[in-house]
Image (cartoon, rainbow, N blue to C red; front, side, top):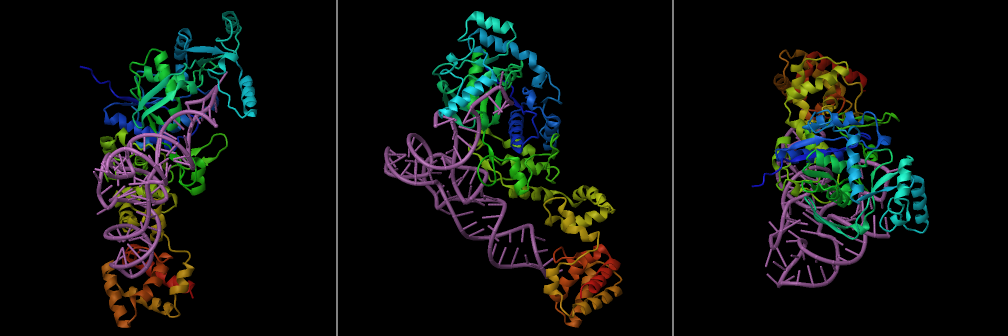
Length: 509
RNA sequence: GGCCCGUUCGUCUAGGGGUUAGGACGCCAGGUUUUCAUCCUGGUAGCAGCGGUUCGAAUCCGCUACGGGCUACCA
């Protein structure tokens, strides 16, 4: 009986900047797959390119994953027995793999300088061709395939810079069953001799990723579609290294596309259309540029995750709201969509609205409280809870509570001009003054009692409800929207209510 | 240019030989309401095109078109 290996997947970002929401989704799908199968989710930092290192990016990635609830079982910042989990710290481990490839003829030394290769690319371009270091060109270049053993030895000894390239085999069909896409095939004649080991002594992504996945017992590689073209190289690498027996299975996720226009979602789209592209706010350490984040924009992590889960995956049912546990329960690679998905910022907001409505007024009051403090407004939580209960269903974000309820704390400083034009008649002042007088006489100040006295009064005067309600609302709120007016009267109190009505009469003539 | 992947309402998607092609967001209309929003109800709208296989194709195959990705000593 063959025992199934424990599922182990990894999220392997490069710390070159803030984590894109597409990256978060990749992490999410990896996490869901791992948890669904009782496996491990690892975080490995792929920092083999020292030139692209950005300070703070790694900490950002870790914080973002934590905020999203995608906590790794192993990895940088999370412990684990198969570390280090930062590739720069694994540098000494890769050399012997590269050497073994040279030894068995799967790879070779190449001494061509970057300048020489650039020059070649330009020459090819003039002829409208594309230079590729491959079976057609490698025999005419400076490498251990064309140079004598002696020359190679001399160059190596003299410390001349070199890289190690994979020698792509001739005319082999590499066919792989991608767990999302099904059968995908490539012919090696179309593939080039990728650099595996750089002249600075670091492996490239291709070598490091294969070696590390092997050493870390990774069973499934779930990554973005941009990696699909290098899958045959990776498969060949496992084979040449003699470690293909337990090699992982591959799955390539579709990309997240711009809401409008062509191409994949980028930071610019967010700036242009006013939505975040990153989970957390990011300040570029070099330029100082700020990129907004879902967290700082007021999204709940559960809304962000729910939205992301349904972007490129569907449960096959009509359920649309999922907790993380529910996602784990039903997640399935087979239901990942193959085509790229356009991101819809309106739907992200809609998800946030849903999760906000799910919260109790007490919970929301707790979240709103610090926000008010920042504005220098002090109040007590019980009072706040009552207010929140009145305006919660009008909000998508916690910050909307202010937009929808500022008048509970501050008297309006101005009144909507359009509403004045439309609803403030010549006799409105007089009517409001008499209503203020009526309010003076009310001793039991609650919505129900006020409404009763008010109704009686209106009937006596034979005034239409609609004629005075809007002006009063304008006086109290500053605009024509909001919850039940009598509830507002009760909430802001008798003195304040009367004061605001009288003030409006003074200001609006 | 070459290679690879993809294509169902405007958007996210279900559906995998026989369905009135389902849901959600958005949008529109109606209802509720003292206002506005929420909410409720309803509506709008789709199988890229052409060939083939088949009694029958959104579904299988091919071609075309379109979209996307890759094509660095970046990941």
